[in-house]
Amino acid sequence: LSLFTLVQFSNQDCMGATGDNGSCLTPAECAQRGGTANGSCAFGYGACCVFMVSCGMTVRENGTYFVNNGYPSSYDGTGSCQITLMKPNPDVSQYRLEFQQLSLAGPEPVDNICNNDQFIVTGGGPVSPICGSNDGNHMYIDAGSDMTNAITLSIVTSGPSFSRNWKIKLIQIPQSTVGKADNGCLQYFTGVSGQIRSFNYDPATGLQLSNQDYSICIRTEKNFCSIQYTQCADSGNVKPFRLFFHTDGVEAPTDAGNRGFCLDYVQQPCTNSLA
Image (tube, rainbow, N blue to C red):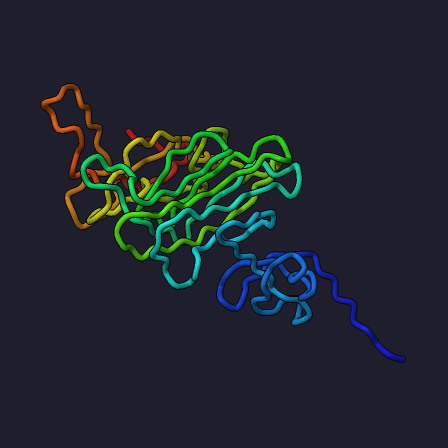
């Protein structure tokens, strides 16, 4: 009498051999869905299937990585690289874009405008283009109510030679989950403590990007009623942020010393007083 072991695959999350996240699938299903086997799972019976896309591709798989041409090598060229995000099911409400790597040419140094490189989001509400160094930052994008609503992510590169890298993890957020951001929040933070940084923030070389208009939201955790902000530690004399008003043609139109802002936050229990 032969004994057979039945192994069931529930498409659970897994970590591949390279440290990238994927889904535990049979090798055949991984190949059929356009993924790459990256290590094993399910006691060696399954493949940790990692999904990576680059220019011109359409994304329906949760947890897909959007990478530059030639990744993991850098990209130094002129052009437009775009991908399209499509819902795999009606319950997808938002996309979280995790910038594990997003290193583009920075803004020009006079008006801090992204003239050469740009990361552009279209189809999910107004989002101002960004550029520069944004490793570790994120965005939440509205997926729309229609199954046919397409979100386009574009990276436009031009200007002088520059070693660009991008690796953006694309996470689908269901409508019925505590991880869903409030409407209108481009950035959404959870947990009793964390750090908020503006796009292209760097205390030494960063520049606050012009024409940015967005909301940063922090979820109130249970039994916490207030929040305290402190300036992030840095090696310079840069303030966490500065309001600059240009009222006439005599005053300088920009603040050349504004590197952006960085704030550490800690939520305070309801019994605490910040006074």
